[in-house]
Length: 301
Image (cartoon, rainbow, N blue to C red; front, side, top):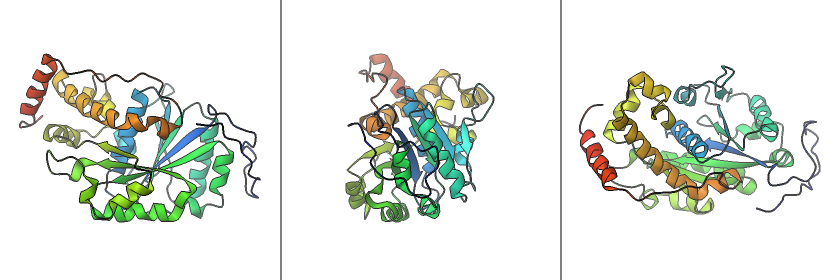
């Protein structure tokens, strides 16, 4: 990535704290808006997987829940920081000014990337605010719209609204959730009418969140959490009393998500991957665990 030099003139509504000097790559921060104008396509679960995976490979991530009605992301990540404050910041998705102020803070925080789980029907929310996207660029913030997709046609229609609203003024990536896929069937963009042009328009960048097995879905329904919550020592693992076998199932699912995100991690964050990622070949013990996990999928957790 080349060093960006900001040459745009300040707009009349530019905040006083917006940077106007040339910015180095290290100073540029990234905002990821997880979106689709259709509700119920798994935006919050996708945001949680994305946040956990980026943290797992070494990025510093801040996250906000702007879905005022459902607050699903806040439920999936109920963790608090060392000061006892919620890890997930709650924003009012109906108040663009509140969201704009939060976004502008991205430029001065220590985190590499900010993730906002946007509410359904919010494709015009930034346009409602009296501020230009150019102001974010001047502040050293690049905006990446992460379009959440399932095999539902309505999800495709909802994604078009964002492409229409922002065109080439922002960057894009598609995150697909396999939850609507038939068991054992991978996500196939060619099966979904109208999706191929969207993926092409977003540069062919596609991340896939694997479908939950029956066992994982049973655990998820009992206690909804982001993947890290089910790992040994995680809040959900403690609450449910998960043993190492069930935590291992989640670890395998999470690893698949990480492997889908890694090829796009530098694009998503604008920064090199902090940790080396190694995918080890499975040993006989690992394959034995896979067989056991397959058998567990026929049982209730």
